Length: 176
Image (cartoon, rainbow, N blue to C red; front, side):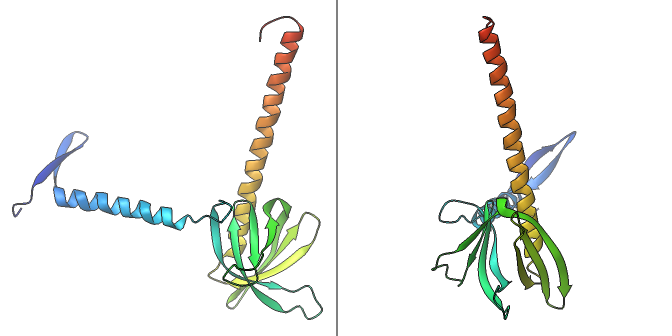
């Protein structure tokens, strides 16, 4: 073994020798992965967790309907659209609560085209590079947002029912 210290790690029934240096490398690698994961979870200025960011192209609402590049930041609550990548100018925020669905996904050549339909039936056309997968990221964010809201609503209804049952007990002169 060449003089390397040996440590024994319990593996159920028997023990298996493993060099300290190999164990240290495994622990070091795990620590580095955790640090990398923490770095990947960026936050916006208001503290919302960034799920995805990058360039999306939005079709204009005017007569020419030209595609304009927007720097986008998808958080747990909204899709922010910036006119430039420096995020210096004010963003247009599209709340996930306002999004009804992501429709009309079409892949042609290097682009994926999709439409975001809002609760007031407004449609916004987007396209991204095929590697971008913005349509699926937005769809998953909307599903997660709506699930979180449904759970909060259910819990508040449950709390209200428990409260009203407690009030009824007090009215009847009994302890809840």
